Image (cartoon, rainbow, N blue to C red; front, side, top):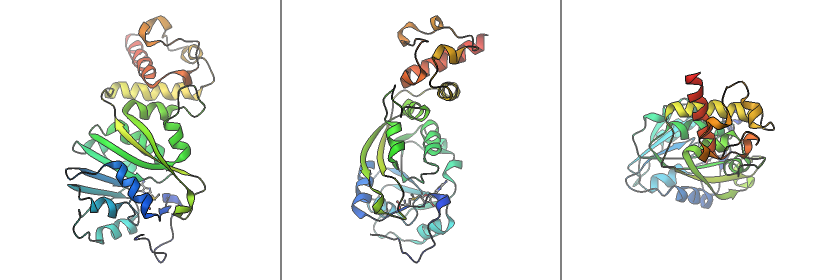
Length: 270
Ligand code: SAM
């Protein structure tokens, strides 16, 4: 491929710059987003444009690029796309973007900078209510955490949080040798579809607090962790199936939400 030229500035480690060099893989990633002519697509971290040129060729109604590196933002702004969608470029830190402000529906894609992939997904999925599909390449190990089953070592706060809003699916694994510079680990491409029922903002705040409390002490029983909150097991809805003798890592995302709501209501009446 690509628009990457070895004469361009050295890849910046601080910005997680590992540039994809394989056109077939780039195409497969964009395929997973299912770009249509009415779509508003946002790409995070376009860099030299491995994904951008393919998305643009598919001619979505609108294409917005969010790139923190001024050099690459400028390059993308200056690259004309004959016959495709000319992207708009926002030179900004994706962590500081007001994701809730995008007009629904919209789609999001990116070979995410690995150093900020987890906080980025945490913010985007909980705040972007009009997101209709997302495709992200992330570290394989993070992808496995997102899709891990309750009770396994890989299951954690990020797995619960993301699955409160989205249904993640590992699409395929990508080896290090298709990037310059090469990362040390495998990558995974994941697709995400929104769930129908998402919690209120108050419930989201309560869930974040509950996850923080529980996964800081994941080896302890729930009853021990919740001592001091005043919440008792019988105050929980019986259909929740939550018992205080289990470790938090056994709870499903749905159970965590019920627990967070109960803790919030309990604190409000205390
Ligand atoms: N899309 C290109 C590709 O597939 O080759 C580049 C992917 S590279 C893994 C990550 C890109 O995200 C880089 O272009 C980097 O400059 C950009 N980036 C890093 N941190 C960012 C941030 N906080 N906000 C927006 N872009 C960021």
